[in-house]
Length: 374
Image (cartoon, rainbow, N blue to C red):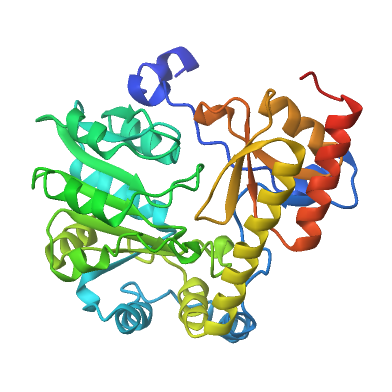
């Protein structure tokens, strides 16, 4: 069978998908540009790394890595159940919270269905919708925030899932408790509403919604996602979880692959939950780092979006992709937001103070030398 014949087997809507492009890894930049020092502030990772307690637990777990992991993630679910005072049968564990997004898509979407979210939001939402042959409806934002009323207006009989990233990636903005309560009271009961709270640990806003209340009340169409990738510094392990009604979790478990979360990830996540000091240090670093970037951007005359996450979106007033390439030559990896429709914006992850100082120094140098066209 030649390539032309093979392509006849491909699904048209899958062929049209543009794959998700992750941030460049440090090793790739070092290899391509021959650099000895590279700083990555592109993928919203924790610059502190994992906690020592998690590292110790994972090292000990290596002795049993020849055995399959617990397919039901019993200990991790037990620990999460204690953490949130939530029955274990209302928890589903995934290979990153991304896998839970995929489970929802596989479980609820048919060709011709609709998924609604917002423009300038997580690129996985449209990608996963198109993978299932569903259409994706991006509702315009208001001041870089989700427009929940606009989303309500887009709901029709074909709508199956609504994704709300709160705080949102890449803007760092959030929807308030009052907005969410009004929204949920009007969403049809047969539409799944998934709140993606990957960055919730960094939130300081007093009016941020406490959505766990709806999960504990067994609200059938509300799903809450969280991850160990950000505040706990375990991005490389790919472990996340969803919280939902018992009926929803039982349905998603029918689709979940066995052994989807590896042994090391389960044990590392359990240990990470017990290290409260590390979590506090991670939150403090991010809170201070955000204020530092705000101050520096203001001094440089650059507009930014106040963030409740571990990154800041900044308008650099020129093509972001070109600027990111110029920064890369100095060993500074940041994320241009062109793919999100924000052609003049960079997303900068909060790193250590030294990393942020280095970023500002290099950014000023590139702008001052005119290495890109304004």
